[in-house]
Amino acid sequence: MNLKESFRYQNFLSGMIIEAGTSLTTTSHCLTTTKTHLRHKVNEDAVDMEETVDVGEFPANNDVLDLMLFLIGEREKLTTAIGAAKSTIGFDLDAAVETNKSRQQVCRNISGMLRTKASKRVEKGADYKFNAEGNQTTYYYDVEVVTTEAFDRAKARDALRALISKSDETSAAIDSAMINTQVEYTPPFNVNDTFEDVVAGFLAKQ
Image (tube, rainbow, N blue to C red; front, top):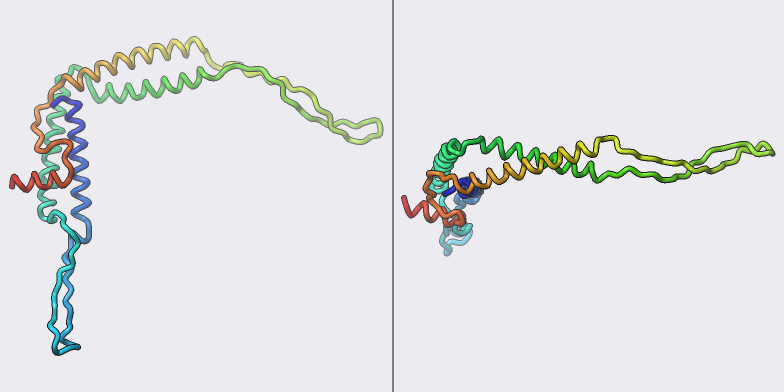
């Protein structure tokens, strides 16, 4: 499998561990409930009856625990194999991915800043004065509001172009590495298997 497939399989194994954990901790999977109907105590002709409460079918906890331990081992093997594969790429894949995320975030920020525009508008203001009779009255006047850019637009555009170019270049290198770098690992299950499929496949090999 290539790196892209190995990351998907890594997530698959993590998902299976979570599902197994849910099954393992479900109360009805941990306990068997038995009801004894003590009929004979109140009716000499009746016979006591014992029943086990049916909670449906589910994989036994002992089997699920064994599966979880197996899955942990497989995830460790896969993660080690991924690490070995990454070392052959020629650049730090994780650093490239994280740095590109930062570049793309900064590109979004710069684009947002560049969308702001200088403007000029007129608002209304109010004040008070005394008229000829000595009464305080309100009068209104125009307020010119001018907004100007508080940043270097040309510098921002140049930075955006450079970041986009570097981001595209890095993305191409990452995509190439994800597809062309092989990971030495043999998956024990199909990545599209359900939890039930995984349990059945695991138990069939025991």
